[in-house]
Image (cartoon, rainbow over all chains, first blue to last red; front, side):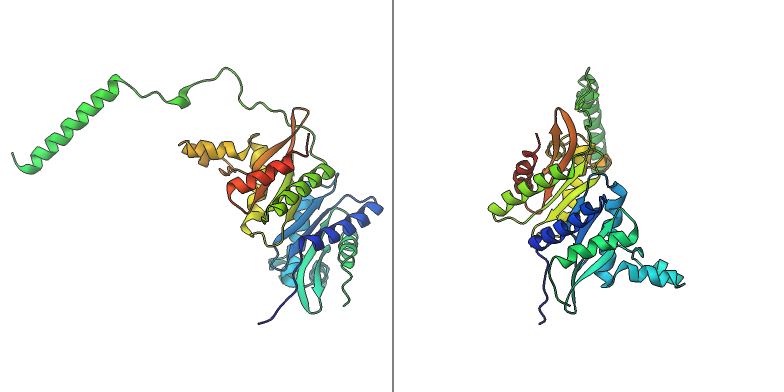
Length: 135
Length: 174
């Protein structure tokens, strides 16, 4: 039997706080969603000023990254390169979803929505970095 | 008279008698009652802030943890849209959606979901045909200055467990 690490609520609080701090530092109002490796929600924060739409998109970006084990930027890049067939895949191919990798294992993902896509990803990365996982 | 004919005649006779009785004393339908005042006339307030929402979730999770329970807790704003969510370690997956549903229904129907549960329990089955109903306790409106600014929903235990935790969260908003 294999063992794999698992995100706790405390991990989520840490990731969420760091991501929120990164957003606040830049005066960005966003939604931050953290999901487990099955794409099920663990934590969500919609900052004041972020829209209900952002909440739905953040969850979907996070779910996409979690179940595909790759960033949604990776999906977006491949679509942009002309691989239009990927639009028919059950993911949201828009930057801002980042898987949380522990070694070779994906333990979940962070999805962010509210500002420009690359800024959303910057926030997600800042959150994940707070776990101090060495890759 | 054959046995079959006799039975048929007896049945028709019984129905006629029953029909006559009903015609004499029609059972009153409580749903026909027309109240003078608007029920549940609670104004919707400004959407709950993230700080308030997170404080409510923290209190709910603390109460749940103290009791050794594993729940999901969701807070929605006065537009029934998700503001904050937390899943405790080991809480069941179905309750992610259920906790949000309870909070959403509490806002949309401007009452605790316990009221919907009670209605169905008392035989008002039509409640289950209304949009987005969840007839299970554990969804409570968050009130500030007489206005509803959002709602909190808890799920993962029994309805009664969910409600206790929900109340701990709701108590943080005044």
